[in-house]
Length: 115
Length: 110
Image (cartoon, rainbow over all chains, first blue to last red; front, side, top):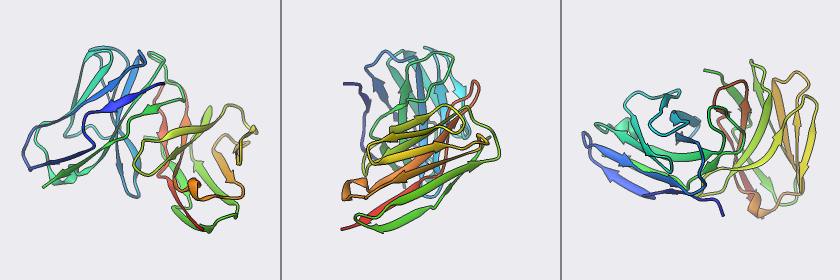
């Protein structure tokens, strides 16, 4: 069965801390994505990657960076966490490289609270 | 970027009722999709639509790709408690990632 695993279900951090959100997929997918989900705002794309060491900015990249050193792992980094980054973060993957297809596989999400 | 307008934002319905929700855009999409997010989980793809005018069913769910390619509709017949969740429309066009609507939160009262 396909699986996208996010390392933490809940995370509490302090303002100014560096935060790492980890995501691993076991499906040999080319594309990986990071979204944040806020009530009333839906899913907003932060960053995506279509290959190892490749990354592209999504709609709201400010305050975030990403790392993809291995195909199966895509990390989201908050260099200096702020309270407005309190949110649910969802990782997703899909099969096709350099193209986009409709079937995204999502992880269960990480609820991050920044105090 | 592109935006999708999804409505209603939330719905409270009695078990057994039918449900309708829709999604509109000012842009044309080549593919329309409907995802469902169960509480505490990530979204899962329910239905994919690839042609204008297409009507596709998945059990009690029926979705349509609008003729103008700028809208889509999802209907759920005879709702049951496990239909509870957030439903997202999404559009795909060209070589860009999926664009998601803001979601419709469905609550079913037994």
